[in-house]
Length: 194
Ligand code: IMP
Ligand code: MG
Image (cartoon, rainbow, N blue to C red):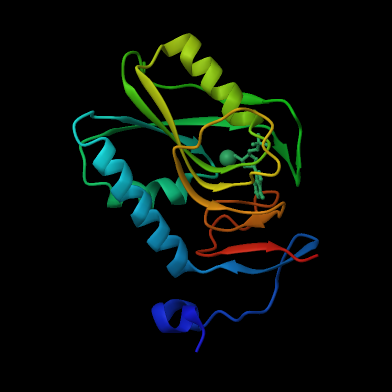
């Protein structure tokens, strides 16, 4: 019996067949069960480290919405949330430049910040965001929680304090991540079929 079938009634109905989003096919990659247990593990670590810090979670939309929701439901600490939008991706290619940042409602000055991101690919987005955050808001500490990291592609010296899964050079969708806006609502993660 497949892991999905053992652990999650809902996913029994899902097949292992590829799915199609726009013009591309994607195959199942990481199950809902694996994602959920990794997210709980990260939430436990963060809760332990930030027991007394009242951190501000800065959630990077749109991709991190599902991860952030599950992460924060599992984090048993007092905390605040802020949402930002940053964009450097177009279709399946990073554009190499950050296109937009829609700002924070409140200052993160002197606060312990945990940035919640779906995936760090080249690191352009995160690097740019951290630089602006440090410059404009002078937080006390800044950490990164990213569900996925592509270590082979990262081009900046970024420390990912809370990393869910290290993956290869694959384009993935689901659990918040999209291919041209499709696939964000999928409860598990798929990768591009080669
Ligand atoms: P970076 O600036 O190259 O690190 O790209 C980061 C952003 O690109 C992420 O926040 C995602 O929104 C998007 N991205 C990078 N890799 C993927 C992927 O495999 N699937 C979907 N979106 C991705
Ligand atoms: Mg993102």
